[in-house]
Structure formats: C-alpha cells, structure tokens
Image (cartoon, rainbow over all chains, first blue to last red; front, side):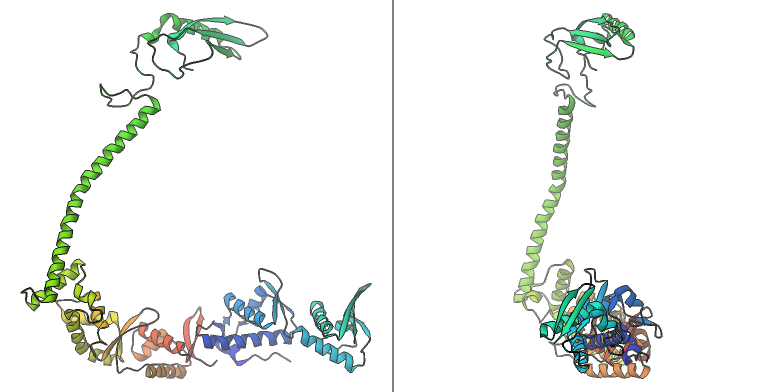
Amino acid sequence: MSFEWPWQYNFPPFFTLQPNVDTRQKQLAAWCSLALSYCRHHKLYTLDVMEAQESPMFNNKKIERKLSMEAIQVVFEELRKKGNLEWLDKNKSRCLVMWRRPEEWGKLIYQWVSKTGMVNSVFTLYELSNGDETEGEEFHGLEDWMLLRSLQALQTEGKAELFTMDDGKGVKFF
Amino acid sequence: ISLLLSAVYFSTVYFSVYSLAKIVIHLHQVPANKEPGPYQYSKYSYIKLSFKEHGQIEFYRRLTEEMTKKRWKNTPVSQPIPTGTGSQAGKTRAVGIVGIERKIEEKRKETDKNISEAFEDLSKLMVKAKEMVELSRSIANKIKDKQGDITEDETIRFKAYLLSMGIANPVTRETHGSGTHYHMQLAKQLGDMLQAPLEERGGMMALTEVYCLVNRARGMELLSPEDLVNACKMFESLKLPLRLRVFDSGVMVVQLQSHSEEEMIASALDNVSEKGSLTAEEFAKLLGLSVLLSKERLLLAEKMGHLCRDDSVEGLRFYPNLF
C-alpha cells in the first residue's frame, strides 16, 4: 500500500512557513500529522535531520518545493512539544520519532499477550519484536529502544516486570 | 663602547697561552669640569677588554696612538648627542630623552594656543546666533499675540523663513494637532486637488506619487516633503474626505475616506482565486496599480487570513488561504 499524501502536500504555500499566526498553526498541525503518518507507514523510528530534508517527506519534487531547514526545526519542535519526538543529541541532528507513544505500544503488546493467553509467561525482548509468533502484529519489528520504553510503561502500570538474563533482557507479564 | 675618554690614563696588556688576551684600561679620577656622560659613577676604576681570537695587538696599537694624539680634544667640545635644529642661545641645552620630551611639550603648548585662537571667532558667532534666535522668538511671539503690525502675508513668509532656518515655530509646538495656518490651507488645497486622481487610481495613492503630482501641478512654489506630510496629517482634523495612512511596512499612502478596506481585500481575494495564485507584480498589472500598492493590498489580505504565501526561489506568490 503506497503512502497517501494529504492535499496540502501539493499546495505550494504548504512549504513556506506562514507569517499569519492562525494560518501557521493550521499549517504546523498538518505538517506534524504528515510527518507522523509518513514515519508510521515506513516504520521509521529515528530520523536524521539532514537526510529528512531530502526525503520525500519534506521535499516534493513534483511541485519543486521543499521545507527549509528552519521550518523543519519548527515542525520538529512542535512534535517534541506534543511528545512525539525526542532529540538524541544536543546539536539536534538526530531524533527519535514516536508516531505511537510508548504507552500506546505497551497497550498493544499487552493486548496481544492476553489475547494469546500468555499472561504470566516470560518472553525475551527479541521474541517479542522478532519472534515468529508476533509476526503480523503491529509491534513486530519494533526497535529495541522503543520496545524497552513500552515495556517500562507497562511496568509502571504494574502489568509487566523487566529483568536481566544471561543473554539479554526479559519480561514477564501479569 | 663609550669610554670616558678624558679619564683614560694608561693601559696594560698581558698575554697568556692559556687564557684569553686581555687589555686593561685604567681610568683616572674624573676632573671637575667634565661633561655628563652615560655613567656618573662606577664602582670600578678600570675597563677590561677580552679578546677571544685575535685583534688585541692591533687594538692596543691604535689605542695607544689615539691616547697620544688625543684627537678628540681638537673637535669642539659639544654634547655627545646632537640637540636638533634651531636651538637658540639662552635656551637650556636639551640633552637626550629629556630634551625630546621637552620639545614635545613645547609643540603641544603651541598647538593648543593655535586652536584656541582659531575658535575665538566661532564663539563670537555663537553669541550672535543666540541673539538672533532670541530675536526671532520674540517676533514670533508677537505674531502669536497679534501685537505686532505685520500683515498676514508677511507672517506666513516669516514663518516660512523660520522653518527653513530650523527654528521651531511656537504656534505649531504648543497647539499640537491644529498645526500652522500654512499647513491647514495646504491641506484644504490638497483635498480639492487629489479627489480626481485618487478616484482614478482606485482610491489610494502612495505619498511619493502625491508629492510628484502636486509639485508638477504647482510648477512654482514647490512643496517640501515635510510640508506635504504635515498637511496630510491634518486631513482628519479638518474633516476632509482624505486620510493619511501608514502601513506596517512603513509605506505611507493617501486614501479616500470613502474607500473601504473590506472591499479592497475582497477584490484581492477574488482576483487571486480567479487566477489561482498571483505575485505582487501580476496583481499590479491586473489592477493598473503600482507594484508597491498592490503588494500592500496582498499583504493586508494575508494579515486578515484570506491569503497565504508561497516563498520560493521563483519569488513570492499569494494563494487563497485553503488551510
């Protein structure tokens, strides 16, 4: 299934940071949702800012418009404020994109665990993200750092417990 | 080396295979009338010259030669360091660094004197100018109080002179908002004159356009930009159907009071929607306006949220705000 671009993507003013405050708010909201859905579609969990500027996400070759570096930073700041983005370094060159927040991931995982009757069982992290049994689940292929955070979220809710084993980390669901 | 030559007495030489050749010059006591030299006193009564390789024999020979000839006594006993040009008799002989310092000080005093002399005339001028300002102020006050017997015409001319000299007219300053008689008349005149051109141009003209138009029409007795602005500022208070308006960008325009903002914006939006998008230049061509004014219109529509902008290498375009 190919990615469906929102109508704004082909509207040239979308790529210019609007000076009118109200217009800008609507513009940024559209950009945030575009960025998140693009990352979700392509299962991107981290972004490099320089690469992002050239990626189709911010660069529409068809209408020959792309977001300026300044505008990209503004969009990323919006995402950060909403809790969907985290900077990996002080220079703001790489970031984690959480098109789904850890709590939401945790919920999905727990749902699968209870659905398959695996409550009270123990899993390794690898099994959860890359095991055969989880194939087809949305969280299959989830990157380690995200998986860890989601399980930590579940842990705070009291639904899971993380522990370390010989060859890695494991989790038990309650 | 500068030896205290008048004090050199005699010298001895001794050789040694194992040590460096040395010449020792013993110094005599300083005679009373001796000139000051590099050193006033020295602990030692001799100078020792040490020769590393050779040259001591030659040096000794020449030294003794000079000692016998005492050639230095033949030259006039003048200062070891020259004084510089134009040292007159009676002036203290400047020697060394002290001399140089003294010279600098003298030069500075001279410059100071010159400068104060030059500015003496200016201070006289300042005094006179002050008198003039006082005079003109008193006359202006008399005019205000209608105590002088000067005709209206002359009053206006006098005020014009005052303005041109940069002296503020007390009438304008005190009665803020009502302005001078001159400006009021001017404003009325402008009101009559600008009606037709404004209507032709869609109700708005940049102040620069007004300036050109008015001065061209007048031929003689041209207006200064300042006068024009001051007159325009009075439109509202004189209840004339014109307005002076300043945009955010600083552009000043004269517009008809009847000219409505909403109409302007609505028409801008219509035009842009019809064409899909417009640049300021295209809009100007469409409406027959100057580029400056058409840009202001588009910016205003953007501010109201009806238009949005597309800023790229191709230029600045305006689109209807579909957001």
